[in-house]
Every structure is written in structure tokens, then in C-alpha cells.
Length: 367
Image 1 (tube, rainbow, N blue to C red):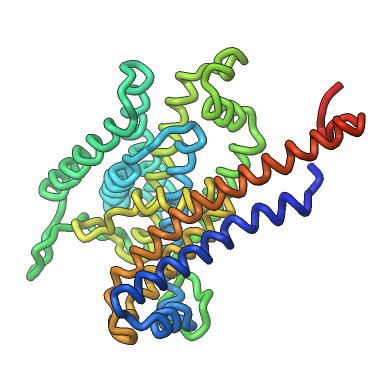
Image 2: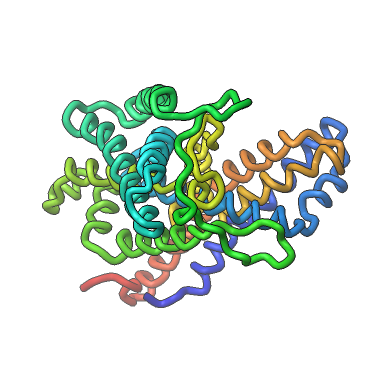
């Protein structure tokens, strides 16, 4: 496919437009409430300390895997809101397995991740089966499954969890030291380390891109998402695609907690991070479901979160301002891409009209 400079410029203009809009809107909000605009932006845009930079990377790793899980559903026009429940239940199951230490270090890690994928895929598959066989909206079923998974994990922790002396929380058995991943020293002078399973995020993104863009399965998924009627007429088994997409989304969701589990926590407890699935929805939308785009979106989202820590101390502004910025950026990106898409369509229509008026065949038209 020939790279068009015009298409490249239009694709780059959408995120740039969104950032400008977010900057202007956030500045107006700051002025309206009487906060120091210049100091806020100086705080947010200042160079992060090495420790903060590592924390940004680590959160981005988690958010990226969550975004890929959501994007698999989006490709089928499926709104998998249950990623949070799938990730929670899958991480708990993997923690129970890994804590037993049945296998030596690396094998224990690999099989624990397979357990997480199986549990996450199964839990998402319930919603897929309900949609295919009973016509239940995946939005409703995944919301309900989120609540059920929270109850199951709570029951599981009471049954198999242990409460440390002096603590009010329960945790699963700590995994053996041979299965604990030390981390990667990617940031100079940082006292903490980047999760070793950064490698997992890269693999997940690469496999996602390859399957979606270079395989028949990916083509069927995209075709079904665009039009079920056309896909059905082309011989695609739509019901099977819906079920496979949900299972695949859940399987990837099962991997969300693995970098933090093996790299830092080493056990699962009630203090494990929640809400990652919903962050994944925002990151997937920002990245337009593209493997590379979601990576930048995950970094942006994580950077805003970590930068908010200094707002209250240095600028005297509530860290909740970051939620406004994230929301405005998300809304601006969606609107900007739609505006650019319509503008591009209008340019193409004008080009085709000029070629037809000149008696020349339209570019890309078949005889």
C-alpha cells in the first residue's frame, strides 16, 4: 500500500488537535475556578524523577494489556465491560496456583499465566455464550459477571487466604522466590525497576497486531464487526466469531495482573488494584484499537496519573484535575478523529469527481 502524505498528515492531525483542545479546555476550567494555570502546566510538564518514570512505565504496561483486551471486543463491536472482573478472577486463580509452587520457577510463571488466560477466557465466554444463544447484551452480562467475580474472589480469600499478624487484609500464599521476577533496570538512577513482564506486553501487542491484520481469523472478526449481514453472506459464522472474540478478550484480560503479581506483589489480596479494566476502555479508545497507538495512549494515561501526585504539593491544586484532563482528551480524540475522517471523505469525493469530469478512471477503481 502506497503511503499517502495527505493521509499521514490527516492521521497525525487528529491526536494533535485533541491535545490542543484538551489544553485549552483544561486551562479554561483552571481560570474559572481561580487556580494558577501556568504553575499547573509547569508541574505537569516538568521532567519526572527516575522513580516516577519507572512507576509510569509499570502502570502503562498494565494499562496496555487491558487496552488490548478491550480492543479485541471493539473489533467485533462488542463492549466488554467485564475486563475488570475477568482480570480480578484470573489473577486470583493464578495466585492460588503459583503459590503452591508445583513447578520450578520459570515453569511456575508460565503455567500460572496459562491458568489466568483460561479462567479469564472462560469467564468472558459466559457472556459470549449468553449473547449468542440467548441474545443477552454483553454490556449487561459482563456488568453482572463483574459483581459475581468480586463475590467469588472475596469468598476465595476467606477460604484459602491468610491474614498476616497485625493486618486486616487477607492474601494468598506468597509465591516461591524462584518465581519472583526482580525487574529490569531500564531507567538510570531509579531505585525501583521496570516490570520484567514488559516483555509480555510486547508479545501481547505483537500477537494482537498480527492476528487482526495478517490472519483469516482477524479478517473475519473485522468483517463481522463492520457488518454481520455481509459477513454472514460471505460464509463467516457470526456466532462463532462473537464467542471467539469474547473468549480472546477474556484470555488477554487474564494477563493484566501478571506483571504486578510476579514483579512486585507476589500474592493476591483485597488491596490489589481495581478499575484497570475501565482504564483499558479509555486507553483503547485513545489508541484507536491500534497496537502502537494504544502503547502511546497507555503511557499518556499513566504519565498524567503519576504527574498528578505533585499538583497538590507544588501547585496547590486538587489531583482530581487529572481526571478532567483525561476525560477531555478522551472526548476530544473521539471528536477529532470523526472530524478528520469526514474531512478526508470529502477530499476523496472531490478527487473522484475531478477525475470523472476529466474522463480519467478514479484512483483505485476496478474495471
